Image (cartoon, rainbow, N blue to C red; front, top):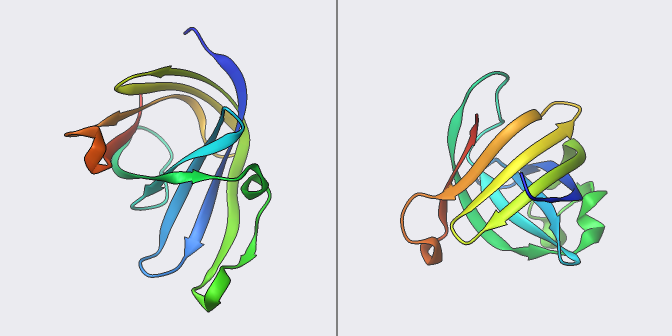
Length: 120
């Protein structure tokens, strides 16, 4: 995998609806996807919605969401190798909970923001 070392975090995001945000460091920001559920142990495939990039400060953010819209807690985090391609991101995650090889790829047109996140 042609990649560079980066940090990642998964935030458990208690808003409506409950979801988990996967954030991967890239070019001074955090590329972000909302996951529909907590990533399980073992093999899985789940929907991931591409969100706007977040500031690096979100690598450590926990607590209240602005405007009283809920709260977040750090669910996982660590380092990763990420190979960014136009229509795919190959990941090697080394976190406390997520460890191993994963893929993020659009399920339709990338501009619609619908992706799939899966362990390989």
